[in-house]
Image (cartoon, rainbow, N blue to C red):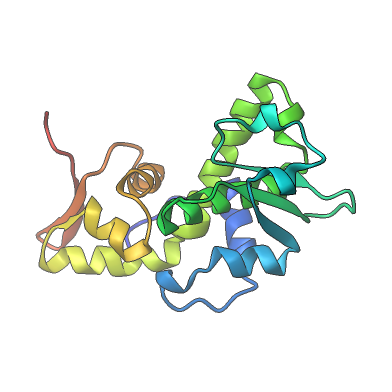
Length: 193
């Protein structure tokens, strides 16, 4: 079952272009480390020995950041803090990949307005990258038999519930806590507070 989907936005098209280089069959096949490798992006620990050319005080408190390569293209480096769980690392690396893919500028040297815009764009593209529309059909189909909660969607895509909520909002333009079918039509569930 395929839910009516509005036209792709620019960031979804860019994510689909990246994914077109891979033959992912299931959402848990999506491997952000392989994607980075394919694009010549190195993932390094956010630790002093790897930061010798950067002002360490600029990255204090950050979980991850990216630096484009001097060689041009979409190559670069993603620095990620040690000790994060695998899901959080995946989400952070995906967002940093999207910065390198789309922006080609060091995050540490742009003003706060450009940074905020770039962060929003990278988050949007990473949502499309890790939760592509082509895999949503199974989620919709599952909702025919029983309610599919946001926690189920997050588990299916190996992301956090917050990230799954964000992606579902991109589809439905409102908060979604789950999906449920009624008389053959899929609708959204939003819990009341």
